[in-house]
Image 1 (cartoon, rainbow, N blue to C red):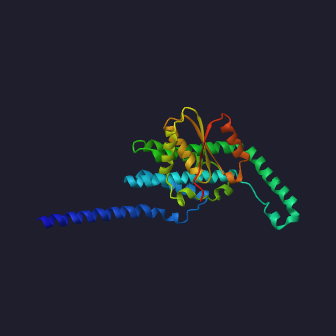
Image 2 (image 1 turned 90 degrees about the vertical axis):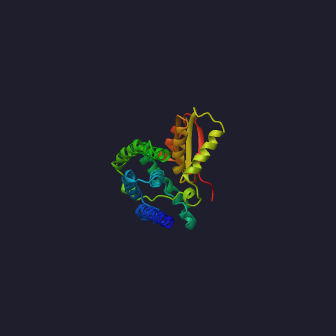
Image 3 (image 1 turned 45 degrees about the horizontal axis):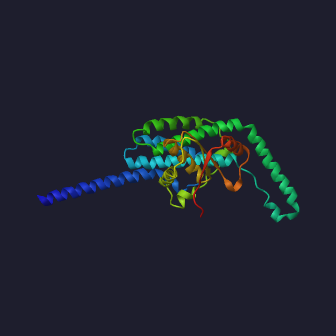
Length: 280
């Protein structure tokens, strides 16, 4: 009798393990595309939409957590790619290294090209600002979902879907749609996770700053596009009611639309929190 009970328990365990393995295989089979992680913006939108449709049907808690992380990574990659596109500059000055006699001409040509971009950017500043504001809102909703408990997931998801629908209905140029994302080395190469960022945020709070003041989180792209919004949302949840976030790419400086936005955010002299991954 005892041997029969043990045999039945072993069979039950094997069946449960087999079921779990099948569920895991089925879940991850939908992510074969991740073998090519450097996607175009259009592909990021498509993957984001697919993940949003998939999320409500997930049953296991670990699957929901995996999906929330994926939504977060997609949203931040989209934000980073859009920011890089609108703050882009053309650098042709290295040509002068090969043709020294053309140095002055190359320098003048570079300045004229970028002046054209700046003027064009100023003309469409309001349109881009509206799109960026909605995109920031979208990213923050996704960050809130990542940090949310099971009781608030449904309302967070509705906010995300509403924002996503508005963004997808916006007219995106072919050039922007074909822009490729950059990899976040902090997550990909340095073994960081969003949990590490939360730990750092807690350490910052422990230093004793008054969260009632004005704060601006500045993230250095690429990693800053993932860190800054999450840090903003987390600190907001801990009592920082007047806090914003923005990202820049320090290597290239700020200019055009990006510079104007940064100046607006710095006008009230906020406490600036810088965030980035560590140097390789």
